[in-house]
Image 1 (tube, rainbow, N blue to C red):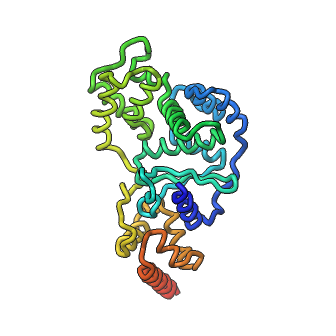
Image 2 (image 1 turned 45 degrees about the vertical axis):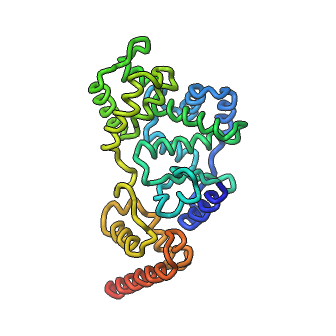
Image 3 (image 1 turned 180 degrees about the vertical axis):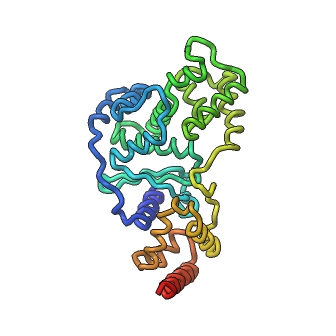
Amino acid sequence: SDYMKARTEIIYERFFNCDEVNPTYNLESLRGKIKSSKKDFTKIAQHIREHFEFSSYRPLTYEILNDIYDRIKVRTYFLPFSSIKLNTGNDTEQTAILFTKNELHAVLVNSDRTIDEAHFDKIHELLHICFGNIDMDNDSLEKLIDKVCGELIYPKTYIIEKFFDGDANSKPIKEKQVISKKFNLEARDNMFILSPKGLARAMRDADLATTNSELYKYIYTELHELYRKEAINYSMLGKMDFDFSNRDQIMNFYKDIEENTFGARYPLFEKLKCDLLSEKLSANDFADTFGLKLSDAMIIKKIWSDRALNATSTNK
């Protein structure tokens, strides 16, 4: 929506000052192959694998995905969308946003997402960049990209090897305990980027299971519910359900990230604080970022300023 585009640009410029993104490298050869693939998601996935030179037989891992982002000079950032008002003005929950300005790209991902969800989001937004301007309506494009994501995370050959005992013509493994054990081992081996729902959908798209089959129903529902209990949020704090419009809560959040080692996950919030104290960022904009009252933002700024002054005096 227009609201989300405007809000994303505001948030991006406040956190990053628009100097954090480099030009992307030339993707025209890959885009040409994607366009010539006639919307065949398996062919598109293979073109992407060949272009970035990674295995056709294993899930697209975090390490490889991050390497691709580095290679094409697109940066990705995790932010708590609900806390900085990137979930408002929308009918559906926003999970990731591709920010584009002057032909430069950055991907913002909701840090409340679990690892497997965030991994899917990052691939999905990367594919939007790889596709470029393609002649498709938005709904069809989103569905095609989701299928390509599924094939990249769960290649058909990988599914057959792990869940069909290596033979696509044989019947799939049906014992629930065996499937659960195999899935959990694979999830751990792949740094928790796998999800039962994603696996079920990939099986469906690869014509290895129908939505009415017992295998699909078990993986999509029962195994999914079991796995969600162990799913890990991207944020080391877990779900960031702070009410940042509450002055005390935002102060406690900053206290946590400054006094604990997991604060390394939140350098962007440290930058925001520094910008507020140096007056690069106005108190009004700081307040708007978190939905604070301006009076509360001014109080927070004074407390931080006083602490910084006291710390300097003590060091002297």
